[in-house]
Image (cartoon, rainbow, N blue to C red; front, side, top):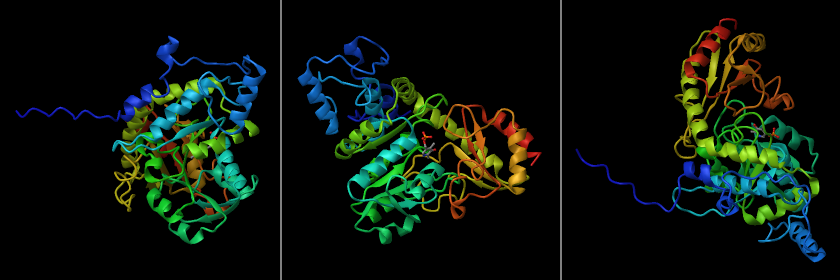
Length: 406
Ligand SMILES: *Cc1c(COP(=O)(O)O)cnc(C)c1O
């Protein structure tokens, strides 16, 4: 028997270890084992001068220097800051050892995070946004509304280079895309965008499966409400970007007030510890379920990047470590069928949102994508499933029973 060689010692900690330890660096010195929840809305000032200097530092987008007062919770909160440090470490993780300078900026929700990034581009005098459809319904609607001063052009992923103008401040994209889980080549869009930063909404993939900063993205955005929290009980959003862009975003957050509250920051940070375990387990069940759904009576089509032929560009393995834990399928009987299936399920919950420990099913055209323009609407018979931690056998049994009503 040949002995297995010992793994080479590595300077780069694994993502699994980072998930458990990142953002907790100060706990031992504090003499505590878990993150303290600092609920202060205001902080005692050592002197007027110290308060004034802190105000100036926060207005300039800086993080507090050691010993600096946090002044007021809308400007800074240490519980939130620990979560920001942790998610930035995960998104910047590069097993190749390449260092990606990254900072996290957390918000009350994913949409507050998106709003802040758009405002920062408008403030820089670059209001033109290229949006690669399909996008999350809320993002699509925010861009279409022009509410925060952006001017949007919707493009396909291969049309980005031709659509960039000297007023373009941002390219917005997702992969896997919501709700039919098509993959888009992030590195290719980054190449086409040239000097224009690309924002990748990484909510569906999570840093466990995909780290867009390592592919050249300028911003990574999460609805932390989904996989990062992972238990359906906390809302939040986060942007991970370069220190220079983070410096532009922090004052916008302070001014507009879309701050993450410390209770939620604690829950989201705690969620990170189990993120790799949850995502990998949920992905394995999703792969099972997708294969099982193919060819079932009443099911016209299954959307899952891991199915044969579903990833023509070969992005799984290159861009994304696996096909993820979201599955969609189209019922041959259209809307009426979808309605009957949702009503007949008992283990699977009929609800919007995703990324939690329990399996959810929803009808994108009627719900999450209702706000999206007609031409970007998913089919009337499409249902989207966020696969949870239940056993594949139990989920199949529930779906099997429901599909008999399709
Ligand atoms: C939910 C979601 C958002 C918005 O996040 P909220 O926390 O609900 O504001 C943005 N992008 C994607 C892909 C989402 O699923």
